[in-house]
Length: 540
Ligand SMILES: Nc1ncnc2c1ncn2[C@@H]1O[C@H](COP(=O)(O)OP(=O)(O)OP(=O)(O)O)[C@@H](O)[C@H]1O
Image (cartoon, rainbow, N blue to C red; front, side):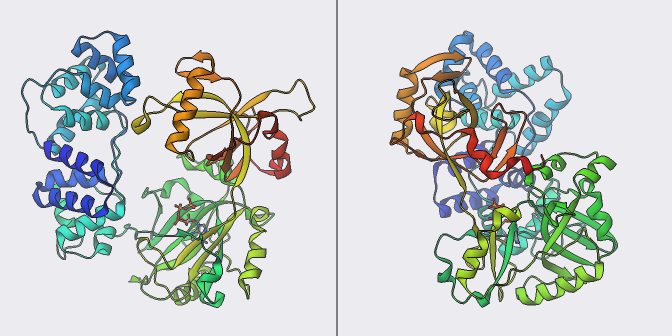
């Protein structure tokens, strides 16, 4: 555990890619395979679900440090993070143990699940007595489900590839799909040639895009690019091998059971692996339904006939990764696309359509066509170099996403709450409101509409924080309501009708674009603005 906590803090201490890779590499060179397997598990973003609430953890820490609740609450507000506050409050450990990571995970952490609260408390107190501050912090994060490390999958892959002296792509693929964090798994992961266990359902790593910020003309001749609509669904890989079908989402979750209509249609496919987008399709209008419709299917394991009828899902295929048992990823896109078209035509299922290629002779034509995106229910274009292979991970150069500009709106800050982590102690969590009537309506009110983050500089955040503490009008638990004075521009990607929100709408990916010091609250937008976007037409 000590070694893993050191790794965690080494990764946290630097933003330099090479230092992060070196820290992981040093860990993998040293750690026993049983520990390395768990490290790979956690570093790749897998983590146990919350086993205990943060509030319980803080209470036990306060009890064992013999401090009153109010002081514990203050400590929490000052630090802004329960795991850290608890780790800091505790008295020094009696006797440090150096039990390896895998024993902590398997014999202590996962065992908490089976215990009642009294036994959990005893186990956690016993653990704290054996751990120093950094280890306690990691332990606390793991049991409260808050463990996050600042390394991307790509860096992890590079560190493992260096440790194993293997190509990055081999490691990336061996990490895909489901696996157990066992010593055997780790040994196979870094083994020079051995294939990992059962590979029939194993997906390929997804190729990801970069956002196109430059003028598209910088990409050269449009004829070299395959242009597709950027669909707003869920990225998925459909695997058809030896009569079996597997469906993986980009989050590396096996979702085969969630979309039975797609799986049924896939029975008509010859052996192949397809990359594509899961979408709820409106067959009458021959266009996708908004993401909100798909959201109703995402978490649902129990798919009823009604659900299938109301939210019919398709896999819109856009690439071919494997054909008749052969890996096709190195072949140029044109070749993959041509074969994909044949495969889709042969399957002949409306559940397995192909992503349309948008034809245009010039970039200007494309700029004009892109204006149709919102009306078509898509997010813009994907540009794919016709000669390119299908690569691993996010690589610049061959796949660009060229999205339509986000919506933006001017809203008024009305509630605030303290943030956590780096900005603990400052009010950084804001709720914004819009007017429910036009400026000449004296009775109009501000209606809360969304939370939004990001977009402000550190100096602005401090300034807003001072404003909030000096303009608080009311408090509800940790939330303060403030005099409506500050106007900020909020961007978002899509709007949905919602009866859960007082404003009647919910927006997707809201974020602060800038502080509009030049606007008074009377100039903020009204809910009316959404009418322009015909939200009533969205089926949610
Ligand atoms: N025609 C298409 N070809 C490839 N990807 C598409 C297409 N239409 C929609 N997509 C989606 O766009 C994403 C491409 O952008 P990126 O690889 O950056 O993923 P992302 O981070 O999920 O992006 P975003 O959040 O912008 O959708 C894919 O993951 C996929 O879900």
